[in-house]
Length: 92
Image (cartoon, rainbow, N blue to C red; front, side):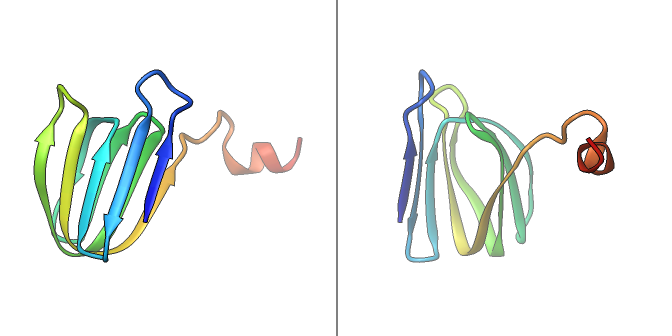
């Protein structure tokens, strides 16, 4: 599976091969990582990768590239919470 967004100047590409090899471009920073979770700042927002036996492989901040190996269970983009939180948005 491959996802590519070219709306930004640099764009972003996410390619998952099987469930064991993830290649990304557009990576800005690595916030945290362990064997169950890898949190990456990307051109499209914060990407949370969850799985088992995850290893952060290639990391090239200058080129915005990274790779993650291990069993990938989910890829989720998290948006920054708008001011006021959930209830403020609910009661507008």
